[in-house]
Length: 470
Image (cartoon, rainbow, N blue to C red; front, side, top):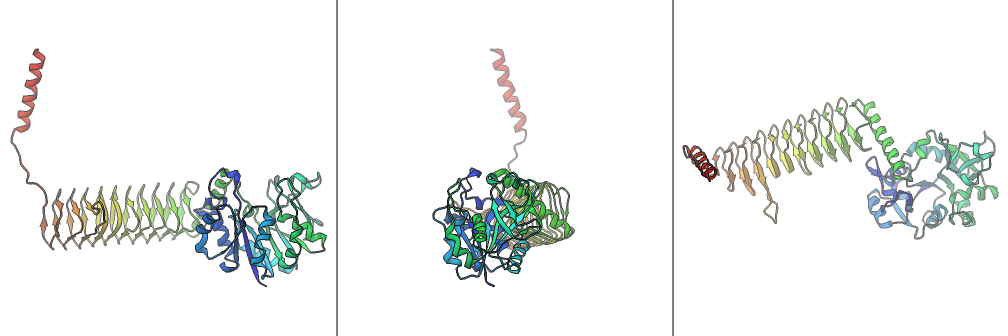
């Protein structure tokens, strides 16, 4: 049986009070729509997923274009039924479709598969995914033929419920499976005779039942999976849930997280066993951390890879970089994009790196800036040393070969090569290449004037005495 999945993502989300399309708001480090697409593509190939876009369609398409899904444009947003009417031509060749909402990010692939399998087993024209939350108020209720029956008579919105129907806890999730033939034979019978003047896909249940078609329901095992978000507050609750789920997944895999309620861990993060994550750490994007690492409090690691046995001390920021086995970072190191920190290397407090390759065992322990540099193994970078990589127009590279000692407060004006085993004296400004095993000095000769300070103090005191006597 050929299935397509249609994801409705055309709405504005006006209750969010935001300029951004609702489906591009993020939880767990990814847009709501990205979560839904990820779940959908575990069930069908990306080319069988159709995203209905409308409000800021270009921005939505650009945000998820890399997923390989297809797009259908709903020029006028006239309701969920109209969205499927818009997609009719695109999916008419499929025997069945599953309809998902682009703002339901917690939905799991397993639940979509259960909906699909139940729909086929029941030979239904329409299958409704339902849930039974603790607080059903505000949701449309699913009215079954009898409490034990899979068959649905109707879906009734909150404001239209009779007193008897108020007691029904089973709600409509807005997620459906349809056989396309009866769906598209009858979809034009939808009307806009409701308070919003829109075509509701929900109404297909009563239309199909009236025509003698089979409409059934299956309840989701976890009601939270089908929850959407209409306000920023609700969005934050979903974000909390998905991040806590990520923390629980990592802890089940052997990671120690001391205060999971304080950590910010995106859903795509991977961490090896026996790594310790201290409170108030943020692990973002596509970050991979190896085994037996320790990430201390207030560090932020984004789209980076850390090998095994890495220590990240307090307050480090690591972005789009690689850190090799046994390296030690921080506290308060800033590892900017394109940095590669070698095995057992040290990048200490208030050191900033950018597009740097720091070799095995090399150290920059204090207050340095290293940008656009290739630094060999066993190099010592003294406190306050910097690579001057920018001439106001272009960036230039610095090459520091193995075993070099760079004295404190040195400035290396790129492009420049500091040869293997050489020394640069403290306080030097180096503008020319330094050969191997040489000593380079680039500073003025010190002049010492004996008793100058004593004489200066005497002069100042004499002036004060004259002024006092006036």
